[in-house]
Length: 68
Image 1 (tube, rainbow, N blue to C red):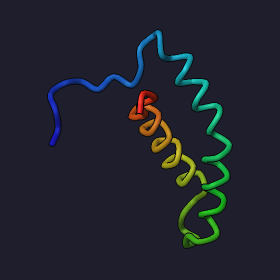
Image 2 (tube, one colour):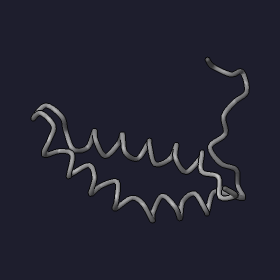
Image 3 (cartoon, one colour):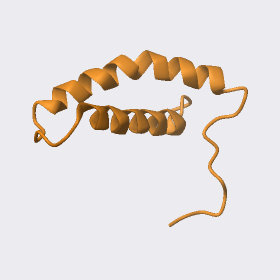
């Protein structure tokens, strides 16, 4: 179900924190993409896995609630 409320990834105040978290976890995403590559058919490019992983990372960072 789509909401009519626009989803904002980050604002000017949270942008440095988001960038820092992305930079912190980017090597892990790359490592997992290369690890998964061994189990994928040859038609799957490692760049596609990396891109999907980065989208997942951005979504996870956006949903993360530090208060829990």
